[in-house]
Every structure is written in structure tokens, then in C-alpha cells.
Amino acid sequence: MRFGLFGGARTKRSTNDVSDSHGYQGFIDYIVEADRLGYHSLFMVEHHFTGQGQVSASMTLLAYLAAKTQRIRLGTAVVVIPWHNPVLVAEQAATLDLLTGGRFDFGVGKGYRKGEFEGFCIPIEEASERFDEAMEIIRKAWTTEGRFTHHGKRWHYDNILVEPEPLTRPHPPFWMAAGSDESIKRAAREGYCLLLDQLASVQQAIDRANLFREECERVGRAYNPLMVGLARALQMFHSEEDRAAAIATRKRVVGVIGDLAKGERPKTIEEDDAPLLGLPGEVIARLKKLEAGGIGYVLLADPAATPNSLRAFAQHVMPAFATPAVQAAE
Image 1 (cartoon, rainbow, N blue to C red):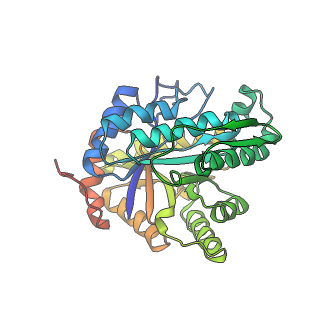
Image 2: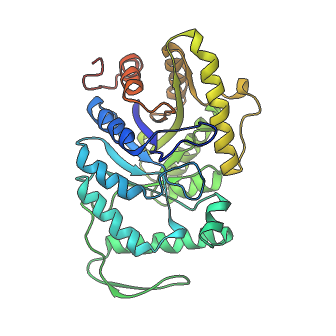
């Protein structure tokens, strides 16, 4: 099993003290330590107008991290394509691929938070059509030899050349955040890797990964379990006395995520088997259940987000999955 990270820096604490990370410098130190320990990737969350102090310029922060790290892959989770000029996005993403030495994963999505669409004065009902046209342009920008022209419903370009070319050819890996059956099938058909959310139950996550695999096989696309990245909240503790505090934190996190997304959430904490919550042995058991269901790539969303939590997971959990970690015990 491969382990990466999912989240981002915060510029300030929210009033209810829910945090998936901390200030920018602390977050940078956290990722540098993850790179040293052998974590495979970071997928940077990007949001706008929430009041939660979340990262709003993910590719800018990833470019800085590219200079501070050596091995860890750096990805977006996600760039909401309908809000952006696709040519500018193609230029920025290609530049980031160069700066990372080919370590960039390009996660994209249509967006789902109505408040963000309203903030950008873009009707959420236009999300799909805007996404489709923009991704057509980005693909064209990275695969066309020489200049190209595009005249569509939203965007018009005449005889343009997008520079620089990405280092990864024909382009960095495309990742799509998806949850519905149709969007998962579409990701498989159109050459995306799949990002799955951190709130879905274990069985939902396994079913969605299997649906992606089945659709890949149906269309003749080679499948690898590492094409599916599953986000999971990490709340590992080392004393039974810490369980109540971990459960309380989980309730607050689910409340904030659910309120912002206006999505479903577990009815009770007892029904919530999604987080990696518990003593190290319990965390390993939950991961083994995912592994048995075909999940091979887990992205840890850690509310603590400290170098110590990274070291603890690398020392106590990673060895159970034969995942090498550099100097994990230090």
C-alpha cells in the first residue's frame, strides 16, 4: 500500500478550532518532513470564500514546495476548472511540472460548492459544460505540435502556442475527483486517475474503486490500483485516554466539511468507519480492510498535521504494509 497526504495550510484558526493543517510555514515544514520520511505524495486542497483560511492558490504553494523537496509528488486536489482561463491553467501547470522535475499530479474537478460558484458569479449549472470545453483546450495545448486555434462556446483562441511544454509527456497525470457512478465511469473512460473523498464509508470507497476498475477493463484501459487515491482522515493516538478527544475532533471536522459541501455525512459517529481513528493496531486493521477490498493508495488527511504525527505513522503503521520509509524511527 502506498501512502500520501491530503490537505493544505491554513492562514488562521477557525472559530471552532477545526483545522486540517496549520500556518503556511508549519505546513511547509510538515511536507519537507514527509518528503524525508518517504511519503509518496501530497494532494493540495484548494478552496475559496469559506472563512476557514484554506489555501486559495494551490499551484503557487506547490511551486514553493517543489524547491524544498526532492522525491514527494505534488498534486492539486483540485483545480476547479470552470473558474479559470484554461490556457493560463495549462501554462501554470506545465511550469509546475518543470519545477518539480516531473513530480506533478494535475487534479481537476467541476466543483461542487455552490457558495464558491456564487462568489465567482458563475452559475453552478454551467459547471459541466465549462469543464468539458476547458479540458479539451488544456489537452490540445499539451499535445498539439506547434500552434493551435480553438473556437468554442466559452473560449476563443487564434493561432496560439502554450509555453512551456510540460516535462512529463504527453502531459502530467490527470486526476479527477469523483463520487457519483457516472462521474467515476467517465474518469475511467477519459483517461483520468481517480480521487475519492474522505467521508465515504469503507464499503462505499471499495465499491467506487471497483466500479472504476470495471469501467477501465470495459473500455480496454490498463488498470493499476495506484490509479485510485482514497482520502482518509488520520486520527491515530497512543493511549486509550485520548479516544474521546479524537472522536470529538472527528465530529467537528465532519460537521464543517458537510456544512461547506452541503453533502451527506454519517448519521452517528458509530456508523462512521471512514476515518483511520484509533490506536496504531486499529488504524492498521482499518487499512487492511481497505487493502483487502482493492484499495492500494491512501491519502492521509491529518487534523494534527505535525512532523511528529508523520513520524508516528511511518514508525507504527507503514511497516505493516511493506512501505519503505526513510529514517522513519528517528
